[in-house]
Picture 1 (cartoon, rainbow, N blue to C red):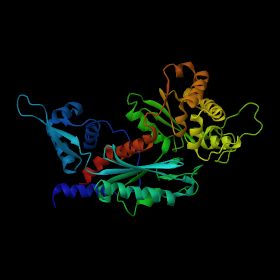
Picture 2 (picture 1 turned 30 degrees about the vertical axis):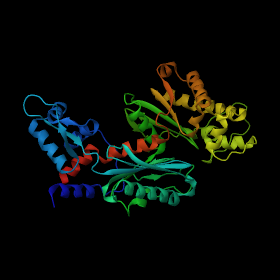
Picture 3 (picture 1 turned 180 degrees about the vertical axis):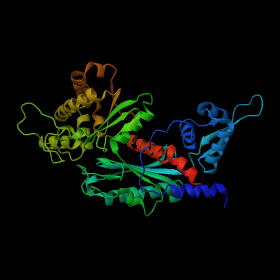
Picture 4 (picture 1 turned 90 degrees about the vertical axis):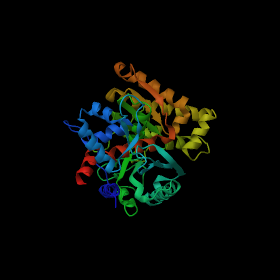
Length: 417
């Protein structure tokens, strides 16, 4: 067996873990092989001379580290520089097609599964309607089936999968990949999601909150120069994700961003509406998609899903429009508090209700600019999602790629070989 195949198999063995630890910043000092790979992942292809300039390493050290990365199957030659004097220098690139990643964006009423290359760029995808409250077994069964379909369609096998990533609409314990007391995910509490995939895949499994994933997707793909971004998802439920310092901010225990279950007091209200989390008066119980369906049904409209409610709004129905504008203002009050506290540069609104953009966005903007501090809103942009329904899958793929190929993990791999 060739040394390249041996090291590639060692790489697969090294990745055979159930969960991924968080990406940490590289330590100071000399640039490690893992940090060199990160450079090539961010900007490929590069010549040997360009790598030398960016890292400050000698030609021999760069050559040794590039060769180690090539032997592990992580870097490939990528052509030559334009002709000039002397011998042209070869270019090197991250081997993005060496394997694949599998990701699933799971919402309250639908999911999107995708196969990506090793940079996290989506190649193939599938979608399905679901009921998250039906429990983990039926939902993950659909995901598992889609993963098998996607691999077959791309001519791949489970051996080609370097990592699996899922995002879910609930609070996630990042260390275990389990959701903890999720308000809308009946039967999922502490379910071993990584363990579901263990019998079929010898790779790590990452689980993330859906709005955290959406936030990173929007920041990386649409606002790369923005280090502080707040993502608000208004779908069946309401959630928030924060990118701070160009990285997802999860809080001490992964519970940051639960804006949907902040409680609001409405003047003159006799009894606040009950929320699915068990409390009363939550933002979600007033402005979430399921609350909109509830209020429209109470007003005599025959609607059963959030999409039905959005369709009614778009027809110009007076009751539906009024309820969405009210939802926008109530949600805007909570967003205003978040803007004053966090001072993001961009607030992105996504989810199913963003299809009622004019009515919803107007209410949010009205309250944010009225209530937030002037300094926090001076250069603030409140915009609808640019990635739309693919934001979660894109963000999950990017997070997964970052973690699978984190510099310290690559350094461990090369040291082991």
